[in-house]
Amino acid sequence: MKRFAQAAVVLGLVVAFVLPGCARAAKDTTGFTMEDSITVAKPLDETWQDTKAVLRELQLDIYTRDKRGEFVAFTPMKRQLYVGTPHRTKLTITLKQATANSTTVNIETVAQVYGVTLLTYPDWHDRKAANNNEAVAIIEQLKAKSS
Image 1 (cartoon, rainbow, N blue to C red):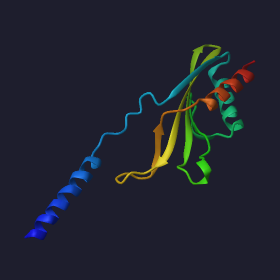
Image 2 (cartoon, rainbow, N blue to C red):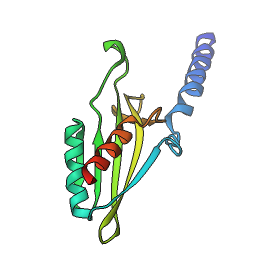
Image 3 (cartoon, rainbow, N blue to C red):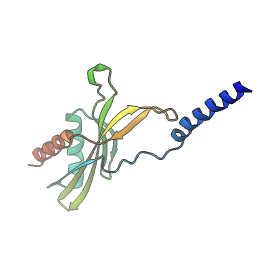
Image 4 (cartoon, rainbow, N blue to C red):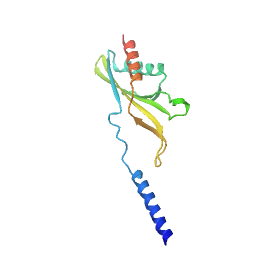
């Protein structure tokens, strides 16, 4: 009977520690992105081609190319000291036609780390962006192409 009571206490403690972690809301990622914007003096089609060329020149991995005006690109995956958690930067670039001969380019930057929890598959998770160096480089190259 004493063993049964001990087992019940241990089982109760295990359940108390495990259950709160099982069902939880997704992490709130509001405020994680850094946003940059530029207006280019070219029509949407030309700006789309220029943006695609800039992403290739910067050797970014282009995940999505939408002719309606959106790109999703990633920096190559890196580790700190070859053993740290893999990380990369996700760039979401949205093109909108402002006038007949100008296009607004919006760039959202978010940092990502690769990880897994006990109840999820391995995947990339958003983290607060520390800098927007890639977005600034894209904007500078788009300025150079439009002049």
